[in-house]
Image (tube, rainbow, N blue to C red; front, side):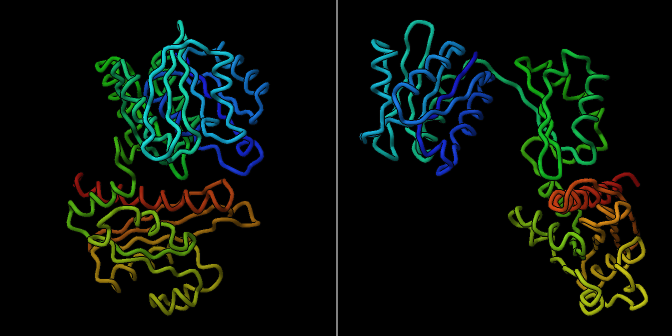
Length: 366
């Protein structure tokens, strides 16, 4: 089914208000398995609204309009409906937050849905619409991947699944990871593709379903009875910040030594002076930081990160070292990121979480 969205209001076009309705309606349509075919915004002027209405309604089965339902001079949606969609069958949706009701209007093969503009008022109505409009059972599986770009992911999908099945898989690039979604109306087909995806990206998948990557690490630490201390240089507390989103993280996370300068590395973690010359980046000092974080905190695990979120030298820009240690095992890795400073900071922090997950999973393979 094709949907359209028409958001009305001067404030949406002059930058005074962020149009969150596009986000919320897009999510509604996606959850219904529909296609949001057209999105338009228009000023509070009747001729402009009418022109936009005709353009949108000709291209979709259901048009959702937000805004213009109040009682002020510039609220013209009901005037527009009387002009272009009169004599429709109407169903009211109560507004339990504000004054203006929502309406579902049906005329012939077209459906027009009127919603108040403020998200705090129309979000409950969108939830009601989700229940009213849902017809088919959609099967979905979600995976969070680290260490592989979107183009490489899609290429592997096409080579393995073929063109038709690849159409049932979507990728969304996030900050530090890529979300991969498998969606089909047939449960057996969805599970079949999901198993192939899991086999194809076995090394890159770090969370599934509703899990997040920080939650996955928390669960593993809890399950294995470990506690973790961090020593962060280049990430400057970014790894700890990601972990803080998980309720109960204090059960397994001691904290983070944010040791950005050589002085901090020496005073807080006792790193030897001979390792602190130059820029304090490399495999040896990262390993020493992980050991020191573990020993000073009394935790069972230490995880450390050094590197450059940005650098004028392209050979150093985005270069990152990670080290993790337990009482009987140490591991280090090196990688290089190519984005800007902000993106690199987030990506190196997520890579640190992925590295820690891999470290813990290796215990199961002994």
